[in-house]
Each structure stands twice: as structure tokens, then as C-alpha cells.
Picture (cartoon, rainbow, N blue to C red):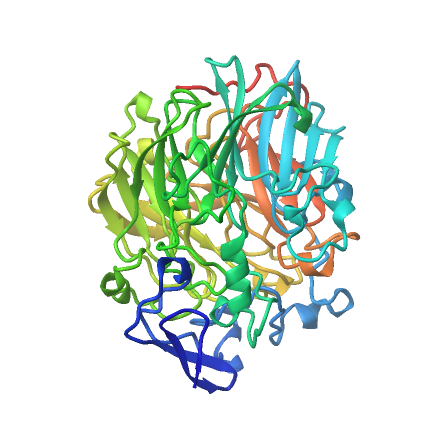
Amino acid sequence: MRKGWAAGLVVVAVAGGVVVARMTEDRATAGDANIAMACADRRPSAVDPGSYGMQNDGSFLHPSSTYVNEEEQHPFPGGGEDLFPATGGYDPNTYKSANVTVEAHYPGQRFTPDPFHSWQNIVDFDGRRYMFQYDRSEARVYDITDVRNVQVVESLSRSDLTGVTGNDEAVAGKDWAAGDFWGASTIQWSERYGGYIMVQSFEMRRQVPFWLGDTPEHSKYSAAAGVAAARADTQLKGFKVYKLNGPRKRDWELLATVSTDETQRDPLAPDFGKPQQGSGSLDVPHWDGGRYMFLSTAPSDDWSSQEYPTYLYANGFQAWDMADPARPRLLDTWHREGMVRGEEAAYRANPRCGNRTSWMGSRNPLYIPTPIEQGGKYGFAAMGGFGLSILDISDPSNLREVGHLDIPMSVSGTEADNVDVSQFERTGMVYLSGYPLSEDCYEPYKDIFQIDASDPAAPRIVDRLPRPTPPAEAKVTDFCQRGGSFGPKRSGYYTSPGDPRDGLLIYDFYNAGAQFFDVSDPRDPKIAGYFAPPTFGPETEDWARSNPTHGVYVEYDRKLVWLLTNDGIYALSSESLLGTPNLGAPTEPFRTSAR
């Protein structure tokens, strides 16, 4: 018997390389609380290879549950390794419906800051339209005014720090100060400042540095040194507010640096002399330029009911007053019972307790159909294994849950991550989805649930959007055979210029590319168009082939879809679904503000 790294955690057995643990009666301190040990180790067991795979009718039967494994292929008979042996099991073909047009393709590393993951924003300056694409230290700024002649106008990275051991973000480079990077951002027009305001999330990395110390498995459950290093990081946990005076980084004017750590004496003057607690602000903050902003965050180390093996926090939400973007003011913090230390009894009621696999808590802020200033009352909270909650946000200083929905378990992979609320005011429907993490469909399929929320107190699943399938002439009969991940990621961003179209949802679907769903009749949702590019390009790193398509960003005003892939960027149009595209300068600049 040997003690684990945290007080109260004792390893009582090691069988087949799997650490089985229990809690002693001693409670860990708040600073050590990295995991919810309310349940014994119940991680999914190895999957019988005969229990899933290709079926006689050409469809694919998914495993019922798997332990998270993001970085390995999982070959199966009739899969990618059999069909595409010359390309390592990845499909080099393109599949496209007749009603989708490829207006341009910009391949390779010059156009892709990170072939695995990125965020996007669009701004207009002096009659030119610019796209930001970035993932922390790696970033590009493009002039996309002429869709068929996109130019890179700035490239940011930490490439000059190649070879630095440990956390290179703690070291200053040519493009970034020490501790600085480009976090997930919302950019909105401010009448007060007469320009764009960017709110940028600063969060700790989502992977504990498990390579430090004694690590029999790549997991926080056995990486004492890695967890300690993550706790000791003194980076900002919160957000920054900038005024943008132009499209390049040199044009950013810092207005505020704000901590989401609830233990800070003054969140507008964070103490960097010691580690800040909690996660920081995750993903794109929800702020539409009006008075109120909502963040996904864990404001202290006690918010720790998190099964996922390389992440420490269970994130809830904060509401902030942005009347003056230079002086944000915290209004309220909300979480669902079971997320925070001391609520273990509620956490044990969740069937995911102890599976060491599920993402528990939010990764994105609230999804809000209508701004509060326009009479909006509800925010939709996607909280992974905690399901979907509907909050009354009409008084942001008193967030209240008015409805909740537990969703069918789908492990591994991320559950309850994205909510499309673009159709809610018209039909009462919202669309909830998680996304896959494993290659070769080595996990349950991630449905997009159609949820009737017309009665917010009693949301219910009424349908699932159709599963995309390859065209009849394709070599594959199911997208699971293409290699990489298959399933929904997101339906774009609320920060897109223009208004979403009634009855149309556009999702990036990993190896199924962009999928256009017609939901104009909620009783009969259907796939109305698609574009699935090759799963890799000539410059795609081997490790990035698992995420063939990782983002979609829609310009509703110019009627264009930007598809972000591991082989650069595609510009798509569909006259029948979106209308006639404008491939030149926008007729009006993107100026969304307090609506």
C-alpha cells in the first residue's frame, strides 16, 4: 500500500496497470482537491473487439462505452486501415453535395495556426474584412475581403522558443510577453468606446503536465508532480479586455485584467505573486456588447468534481456587469449541486461518478437566444456529464435554475457541450450535442438532440438530427471508415456577422466536414447539404489527422461558410441554403452592439 499525492487518497491495489483507489476519512485541503473521489474507480473496461464494428448493411455499430483515448487509432475490420492502407488508414477523397460550392481553398501550414484546434473572429476596419484564427500562442490574421484572394497579414507564434523545456508560455518570446497568449475571444462593437472591444479568456491548460514525475498512466490520478505543477502556475485565471484600434496585435489597447478567482481581494488587480485558484475563463465569453457577460469558470480549487483524467475542475458560470468594459463587476456565480467539494452525496447520484472518463461541467458559457436588453430571460447551460440546465438570467445578480435535463450517457467523448439556440424563439427547439474524442468511432455516437424547451421548466428530448452518411458512390458506407473522429463539434459561433437563418443549422462534423441541416419543420429534420474534404493534406502532421475538420464559422451577411481543417481553410457557399454569396467587401461593416 502506498499513499497517493493528495491527503486522503490511498492506493489500495494495482491490478493490470489500473490504479484502484478509495478515500480515507481524512479530507484533502482545498489546495489539493484535484478530483472528486466520491466513488471508487469505475472506468470502462476494455471493449471486446467483436462487440462493435461494421454491420452487414454497411452501417457501423458503436461500442457501448470506452475509456478516453484521444491519440491512438482503433482499427476494425473494414475500416480505414483496410480501405486506405497507402495513406495510413485516412481517406484522401472528397464528398460534396451538388448544392454546396467550394469558392476557395487555402491549404497548408501558412494558413493554419494549429491544424488540431482553433477559434475564429471577424472584424471590419477601413472597408476591409479580417478574420482572426488562433489557439493561444499560435495565431493568424487574414484579410478575407476578397474571398478568392485571402492574404495573411500577421502570423504570431512562440516558434522562437523551440526547445524550451516545461511551460514555454512562462517565457517571453518575440510575439508574446511571458504568461501572455491569445485566449478564446468575443469581439463586439462598443458605442461607448467607438470601436471594437475584445474580451479574451485566460484559462489554465486543459491537460495536467502528466509527464512530470511518476506516471504509470497519462492521468492526473497518477501524476502527483504534474498536478502540483499545474497548481503552482501563476498565470492569469480570468479574462482581459482590449480595445481594438486595428486588426493586428500591435493595435490592441489593454483596458482591464480580471481574475475569476473568488479568493482575490480585488479581481481587477490580481495578485500574481501566488497561484490563482480555479480554471480561469473557458472558451468564448458570452457578451454581445450589452451590459451583461457570462463566463464558464471554476472560481476556486474546490470546484473539483471532474472525472476527466487530465483536467482538474468542474466549471459552472459567472455573470459580470460590463456597463464599463474597463471595469467589469462580478454579479453572481452559479453551479449545479454536486460540482463543488462538500457536495459528494449529490455527486454520487450521477451514474458517471468514478468512471475517470467523463467531462463534468461546462466548457462554454451560457447559450443565450435573446439578450437581456431585448427582453431575453433564459440561458442554456451545457454541462457535460451534469446534463442541460436552463437558467433564468433576467436578474443576472440572481441566477436561478428553472429546468434541467439529464441526457443519455455517452462515454467516452464529451457530452452536453454545445447548444444551438438560433431556432428557440421561433420553434421552442434547441439542439444539444457533445463531440467525439476518439478516432475510428471508438466510443458511442454523439447525437445532436432536438430538445423542446418551449416550457423551460420541463425540457424534453423529442428527436435526434439525422446521422450523416457518405454518398452512394463513395468507397465508404459509413463515415467511421474514413479515419479520424466522426461526430458533431459545433454549429459556429454567436459572434458571426449577420443573423442566423431560420430553419438552417451548419455543423462541423470532424471527418464528415460541414453538414447543413434543414430544421424548418421540427417534425422532419433532414440533411440538406454537405462538404467533406480529404481527412488530411500534404503538410498535415500525423498527430493532427484525428481532427480532419475542427471548426465552422459562418458569415451570414456575406452568405459564406469558412471551414477550418487540418489542411487549411475552405470558403463554401450554397445559394439554395444561404443565398447568393458576396465574394467581395461587405456592404456594411460588422457592428453588432447592445441590441
